[in-house]
Image (cartoon, one colour):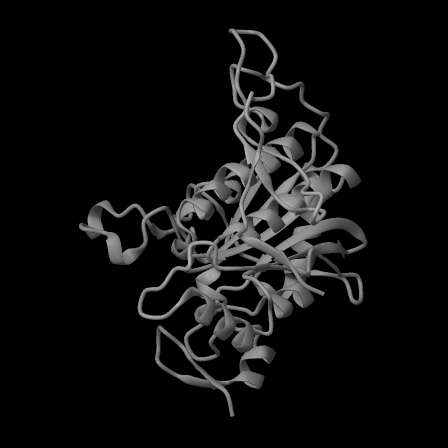
Length: 313
């Protein structure tokens, strides 16, 4: 029988017991990690979720190996979680309201953001922009995926640019920050939401606890109740109703005019093109600014397609 140990009180819980308790420790009340599929079941209306980009999977563009190869780590994460990547995106409804969901699974390599995770998040925002729907994201991530090097850091700009386009269209983004939310994920799209909600006990920041030289000056700390993200006071049992309520409060904003080049917009920051060999593939190129006040222009060099994403059926 599969059991999970509570990191706070050390109690071993059976999988069925935790699922009934919404992955909250029955003994001490600690909020534990929830598998992405279980989180979607809690949030979305019954039979209302339609997954997007399910066929995108990571490859090993750098042939990275530390104590184990990147390919072995990916295979183990897929076998353990039943997912193909650390994030699941799709169309859903919250109390009848249409949304696009972005849900991380921390058990898949710590919810780290590599090329596929960044592509799926950017696709979620772009899909929501086309449908004129809000985005609800549930974040649990250790940051960028070190096994993909600079390619993983590029996802910060890509996801932030996609979120900027969604925001300029006057559409809402609600982010639920769970334990932990660190690194490049916290520093990109996750912190750009209209409403930030933190689960009890969530550590949120850029630097993780292992890298903090002085606990008194920690960059990552448990969220303070009087500032920063809103505390999740309603609990997991009413997360669907609470999400739908906040959805209604921030929806319907008028579209914003582009602010370029004084402020970087999505087109200025990153351009994404389709690879004719695989629809939806990423090709990135920096956009060059003209003189002050002039519109953006495409770069003189073609986009560079990286082989970090593969499509499977």
